[in-house]
Image (cartoon, rainbow, N blue to C red; front, side, top):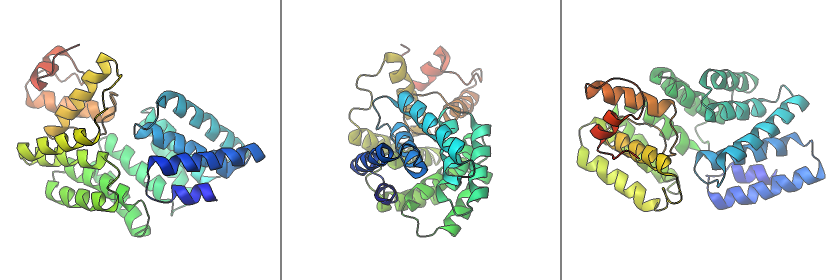
Length: 284
């Protein structure tokens, strides 16, 4: 219960570390304590998702093991289906992730986190109107959720995709005010400005994000650095709605196809030489 009390507060790394230790202690006392299994899996995924993990793939693999064990013990545990959705979404198995998130919501219609995941995966799948509807429903169900900032961030990205950039900027500023420690929200200001043709403001948002994340590419392979630079550039130009993680997933592929279309080059959805040249990025 102490671990979950920490998780239900605005996210930060120190709080997650303390909660993780509490869940580990609980599992030493009872290795089948399903609430601790789900809690620890949740932290592993959060750390991987937000770039707070030194070995994200390893952590996601462990989260999958924990949640598989949980569902074997309690197949109707809604929060376990929610974490299953997150594991699938991290692996870009979007349709399976959507089904798992919908199952979590069917088991607990007030699960704010499952609603946020469902909205995010609908957005990644190219359904911004559905994403907005889901996240607005969540915000009506849980107007006092301590992670309301996350809902506002997802809503804003759906609004950017729907060309509602002014509304998106308002919601992003609200999200930042609610949780100024989460740096990636500032990144999403860039595509909102980019879609409005406000290039200077978009570049300023990128610069502020980089100032707050000075080690973004430290120790990364050159191929990953190229993806990160491409994500930043696509974000500044108003195309990319994901986080800066050096991974090529649905958000990157969708941004690339749209960018390539506008540049009159083959719409491969890949970071080929022609696309890198148009982005002003030297290939590795």
